[in-house]
Length: 124
Image (tube, rainbow, N blue to C red; front, side, top):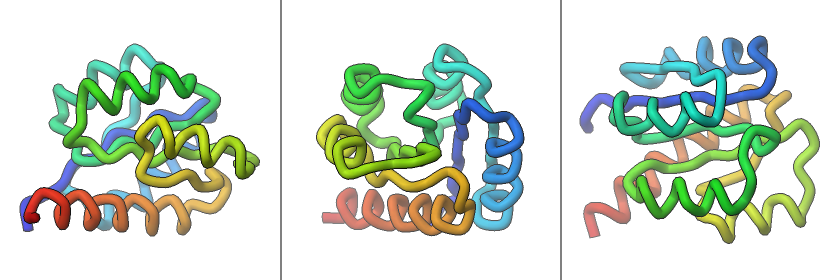
């Protein structure tokens, strides 16, 4: 399996760093984008396989556009209190998953799972 790259975009810089620290154990390159604009430039520049994006940083329409523009990148969304409506909206926009950003373990699991799903889809 090729080394994988991740870009993280979170409203809370401490959460972004906590997620990044955990993901460094699994991925070759983990970088943090501090704004939506930085995220949009970092994904292609870093050749990100996964982007972990706070839903407070991006709208569903912007998420859908990102999914259309960069279909090879799995989009894992986070939120401080995700609900069913948020999950449905994000998944409809192209997210691989939505999870609570407080639980770094869940974010890591979801990120790893989304990479596996992308790899299976590309192999088929």
